Length: 158
Image (cartoon, rainbow, N blue to C red; front, top):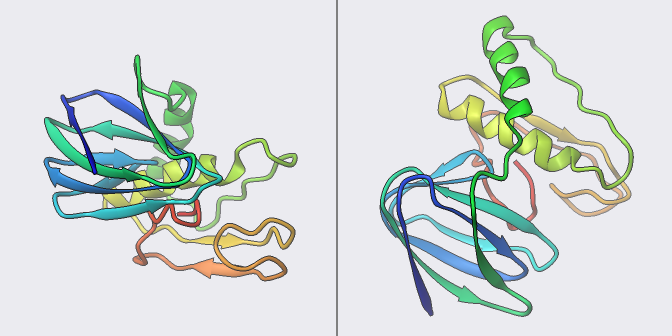
């Protein structure tokens, strides 16, 4: 097991298979808040950012091809803040995210949904990509209702 100390605003990328536990402080993972005691398993094919909300201590155990990389700054594009603010302001019942294959739709959806939940708004998701479903087995369509833990990156979903 390895340990990493973070200061507020520090960003690391978790890549490949690894498990981690927040020993002290709070961190954001894909916009979802992980508090002291939270344990996460990152899927071997995934890469996710972890951002410190304050001083934090993380224990991690790398698995196959698992690594932790310290980054120079925030990885979430600032342009994503505008649609989140609009959703908070307008409170639409449905937001549809579409795009070409492998352009980051799942992550783009994960970050705002987790952010909305942190601010007390309801958010849910339907994964209808039966070819490469992240929320369930391939060939299935799955809904993740509001209130269900959404920062489970084991499946790379929200």
